[in-house]
Image (cartoon, rainbow, N blue to C red; front, top):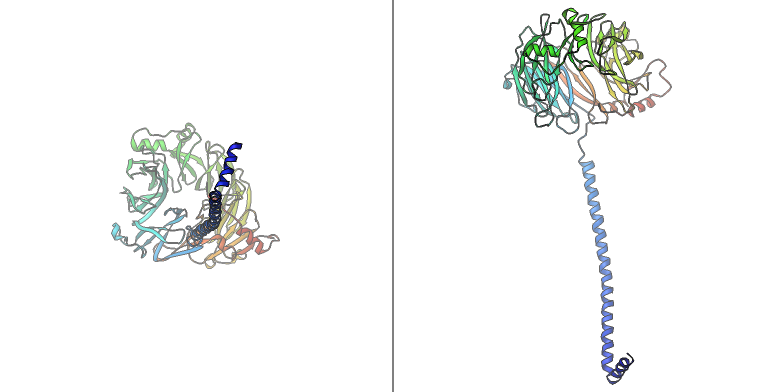
Length: 552
C-alpha cells in the first residue's frame, strides 16, 4: 500500500498537468452536482406551492358544491302554508295522509264532488262513465300544495278505506278502496292514481252501507288481508267478503243475525279469535268471523272461535253479548295488559270492558258523549281517553286515565254544531299536544248563538294545565281536520278542509295547510282560572319549543 502511494506521487511529479486535469474534472463534477441541487430547490418549492394551490382550489370547489346543494338546491321541505280552492263543489268528510310521491313528506288525500277536476288534469266524469257532477279523489303534495293526481272514482262515495297492500313482488303499494253509489267497488293505487281493480257490487237501492269497511285476515291464500263490507236492509245486517288483491267477492252475502248499526268493530279475543262487534241500540251484539266465513263460503276457514264468547252468544237472543245503560254509540279497541280491551261509549256512560270476559274495568257515569273519544298521553307514556261530554255551549272536555278511569283534567269548552273531532300528537317528552275546536270567546258564550260566533282552534299541553292557546279563527264551515307531522320528527302542521254545509248546495271548497309553530307567535293565550304567573310571551315560547314524535 505504501508503494502504491509512492507511485502516485511519482506520477504526479512526472506529469503535473495530468494531475491538475484530474482535479479539475473532480471539481467540475462537484460544481455540477451543487448547481443541480441548487436548481432542484426552487423547482421543488414551486411544485409544493402548486400542490398547495391545487389542494385549496379543490377544497374551495368542494365547499362551493356543498353550499349549492345545501342552500341553493335544498332537499324537499314543507312550505309554511299553502291552500287550494275549488269553486262550485262540495266536500266529503274524508281526509288521510301518506307519502304519495315518496319525497319523505306526507301528502294529503281528500274527496270532493264537482263537474270537472282542476285545470291541471283532464279526466272528467263523462270520461269515466259517470254523469256530472261526480266524486273526485285528489292527491296533493304536502310540501307545496301541488296536485299530484286526481281522478273520478264514483258517482257518489258511500265509504272509503285506505289500507296497505303487499303485492307478490314484495314492494309495498298503498291502496284506497272506494264503495260507490250506486253499487260499485274500486281500488286505486295511491302512488299513481291508477285503477288496480273495479267491480260493480250487488247492492240494491234500499241497502245502506255500514261503516267502517273492515279488514279481516287473508282468506283466499294470497297473503293479503281481505275486506268485510257490512250492509243493512231494513233491520237485517249482512256481510260480504271481498279479496283486497283482486276485488272479487268470496262466497256470497251472509246474514249476521243481528239488528246492528254503524260503528262496527273487529275485535280479537285474548285467545286469538276474531269477532265483529256492533251497536244494537242498548245492547252490544257480536258475530264470529269464523261463523260468517263458513256461512258465505260453505267451507272451513283460517279462523277459530272463542268458547267463552260462543257460550255468551248461544245463551242470548239476537247475538247479544252485553246490555248497556243507554244507547251504544261508539266502540274502540284499546291496548290492555294481555290483549285488546274494548272502550264502550253509550249515551249515558263511558265504560272500559275487559277484552276477554267483557266485564267493566271502570265506568264513568252521567256522561253525554256523542262523539268518538280520542287517545293521547296526559302523563308521560300513560294513555288517557279524551271525551267530549255534552254538546254546544254545554260541552266539557274530560281527560280520563285509561287504566283507572280517574279524571285527569276537565275544562268547559263551548263548541259549535258539526265541529271536527279533537286530535292528539305525541311530543318528545312522551306526553301529547291536544287540539280542540271551540267558540272564539270562552267567557260569556252562554248568551251567544253558536252560529254567530267564530270557530277557533285551541292547543293544549299537559305541562300547562291552566292554559289554552287559541291558534286560529275560522268563519267557514269546517268539514274535516287533522294535525300531522309532514316530515318525521319535525314540526307539526294542520290540514283543514272547509266547504258548503249542504251537499245539495255547491260552493267554495278549500284545502289548506298551516304550520303550527308559525301560528304560535300570533296566537291568543287563554288563561283558565288563575292561569299562573308566566307572561304571554313566556307561554308562547314554551309552546314554540315543543317538538313532536312520529307515531310508532
